[in-house]
Image (cartoon, rainbow, N blue to C red; front, side, top):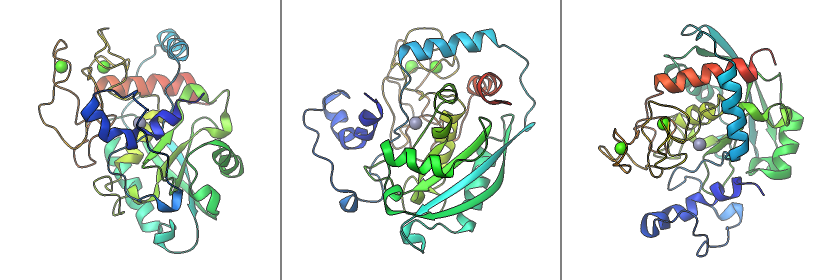
Length: 299
Ligand SMILES: [Ca+2]
Ligand SMILES: [Ca+2]
Ligand SMILES: [Zn+2]
């Protein structure tokens, strides 16, 4: 069973989490509304990126530890980007985002990844009118959409923008998943999360930043909660572990008091508002670089 559906419901459950403190309590979850009844702008950030199993995570750590190499210089790797606009008709209200908004999104990505080896080259934009793909949040419609549209190989970034519904902002696939599911590789984002979109406070373009972070191999900063290993559950030593996702921009939040450091609420891999998140740490950048070499470069 895919964990994706836990994350899909994360938005609905999110409000209850604060009260019950139990992210696994699905008892009171209301039945999902039909897509056309769902509000377009999520109330809280929701990311449906599927967690790797403990075994998969272990295999990834093994691979990374065996492939240590010098880090690539800042800006030395150009990632080709293929953008697929999914709409249900013409006009921005139907998800047919203009080229100007896509260009703004690319500028946000350039700035967010400015301290990393990665820069982005938008190669092409294609537009598809398909009401089923327009509201896809995974499953057979995702497979059909990506099988029809995906371009390039493991080191090419495919971005799909649609109106996934379910209170979601996006999801991504991890580098280690490419070999088994090459056609599914890529990032799907809510079209209204682009800079200037309507998904306030998630409309400055950092949903793409976050999802591409997953595509480069980063986990959420709250992965593993207050894990006591040296790196925490996200495998990165300089992101202090936190007990749960942070929303809004809660300065000074510290949910793992037994672990040094305040929660990494300004990190792109948390769930805070776009205006709050502004950081990839050195450890995350190193992990992305290792992932690139191990799983994507030339594959
Ligand atoms: Ca960490
Ligand atoms: Ca702490
Ligand atoms: Zn995420």
